[in-house]
Image 1: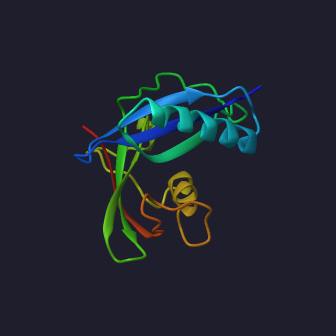
Image 2 (image 1 turned 45 degrees about the vertical axis):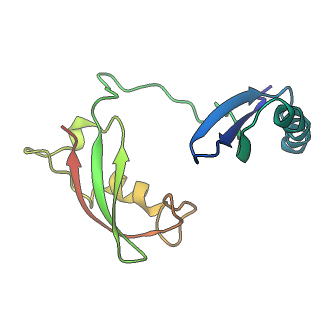
Length: 145
């Protein structure tokens, strides 16, 4: 059973934050929210900090896969992307395959796999970047050094 985790972000009077993670005993979000609500009431009685937000997560290993031979978490790539608000943002992909890197460290942003990945962040995709923007174009890709 995959139980929900709740990460509580707390703040002090100087606007500094700290997080505290709690494990619930349920795999039902509504039940976890009720339990965490009761816990927060008790927490507020024993801390001077204020609660900013509670973030819930549920581990899901149904998409698990094996690492490729010679894969390396230190080998990443950074892509420069134009966003729908006109800004340029960096998007990093960890463990980028060296076979997709050209001599000199450049990456072909029209590579079928790279393009398919970034399609998920475009207007018709199901994902946005951190501030809710979508990608309108992938401009460049380079291997991180």
